[in-house]
Length: 211
Image (cartoon, rainbow, N blue to C red):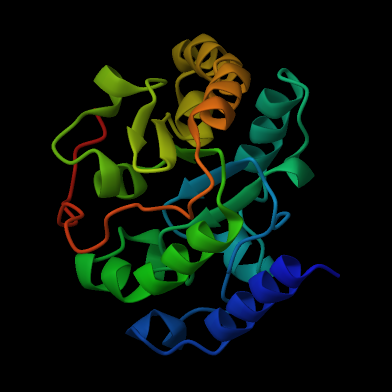
C-alpha cells in the first residue's frame, strides 16, 4: 500500500468518527468517498442520498450506473476516479446541506484534494460548484474548465438531472468527452508545486439556483 493510499484511508477513518456538525446523528453510515489516491479526476457531488447512506458508498443506484456509462464512453472506469461529496453524512430527508454543514465538512474535502492532487475536478452539484463558481448558473458554464491555482475545475450537470430530463443526456455526453483533453492540458500546465488553491479567499458558500 502506498503512503498516499494509507493517508487517504486515514482521512476516511477520521470522517467515520466525525462529529463536527449534527448530520452524523441521523446518518446510518458516513460516506467519505472512494477511489485511487492517484486519481486524475475527482468528482464532487452534494451529499449522500438514501442508498449511499445505507451502503456507505458514493453514487450507488441509477445515477452511479449512468456515471459509469459516461465514463466508459471516454475509456474510463469508476475505479479510475475519486468520487466524494461536499458533505459526508446524509442530510435528513435528503434536504439541501446547510452552509454551516458544508463549512464544517470542508476540512475533509480540502485534505482529499490536497492529497490526491487530481488533474481535473468535476463538480456535479450546485453546492460543489458554488465553491469555485459563485453566482454562476450551471446551464451557462457546464463543461467549461477554469483554472484555480493548480486545480482545473469543470462544472457539469448531475447524472440524476439527465435521468430526469432526457434532453440533457447529449449535453452530458459532450461535456464528458472534453475530459481527456482537459486532463492532457492540465498535465502540460501543472508545475511541480503542491496545489495552491486559495482557501482563505475562497468565495463564501451560497445557495445557488440549479437553472
